[in-house]
Length: 407
Image 1 (cartoon, rainbow, N blue to C red):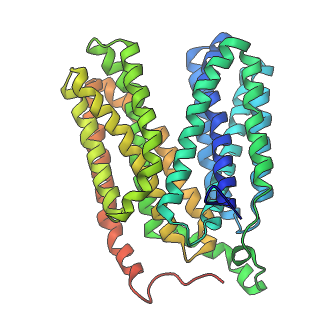
Image 2 (image 1 turned 90 degrees about the vertical axis):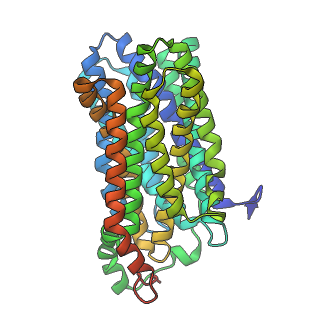
Image 3 (image 1 turned 60 degrees about the vertical axis):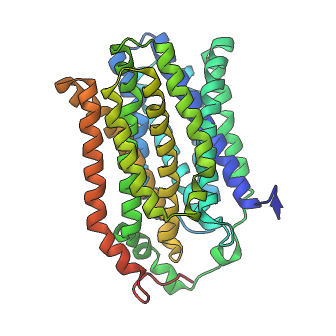
């Protein structure tokens, strides 16, 4: 069965992604102002907000190891319900310790939900549905959910108050849980396995830790997110330092984010003309160059295309990184859970490292030079990893060397 030309299972996955990330977009806008409204110190606000990323990071590999094709529906639904409960609980306590605990629970459940959801996406994509298009739509739905949450969350909190905003945000993961229970895994993926094969499941899953294609995709996402999560907050500081208003900085960032959403829709189509490996290498290089060039100018007419380029290139690289994971796990179903975990760990680590390193380096040499140092460092790290991993990727691609299909 197909809806609007898309396989039914993929439509359900995409709806789950929009719902899941709408909640996170809501909370991104509302949580810090709510905590400040409660009189919590800025340093403690930072710790409470960042606790989610740490918990999410630690959930990735356990969730990936537990993933089994055809049996993830209940686990994803339970994790989504936990996210909903945590979201509902935020405005109903004023204990800083309890808020931190809720944030940790939220982060762990979010990490489990999104890791298993991506692994399930790898499984339910029909081989006939082009992987670049499928991943482009997945990434676009992620960005769309965040954008909807951002826009709706701020307005809702201003209009109806914080408690109402968190309550509405909690509805989205409940919807995701219900939708997830409607997914039916194709028989070729969820078919029963002999006991001997089931006993080999854990080693087969752990083999993803040695898969060079998956490792390179995770490294790509780490570098991309480190670069972008540094750039997003510190560009505003740079803009103020050169005399731009926060309004103008917001317009530049908003235009860039809007461009990134639509870029994800079409990024997968680039594979028709170039290999995804070529796109990844060119994209991370151009992204680093764009960030490096930002502090060399104070002219808005030059800053605008650079800032938009950073967002557009991130969108492209997120899609091509996901396609690389699909390619690396097409013949190894049991690796998909760990592959999803590693891929998302790269994103989480980059999201933690970017602001942290940006702040440390900027404290020594200033915001502008820091952008250039981080840009060069991420580029060197990615290309160094590519040089080490590419021979192994080519070796696995030779006939008779790569992993054998899992029945």
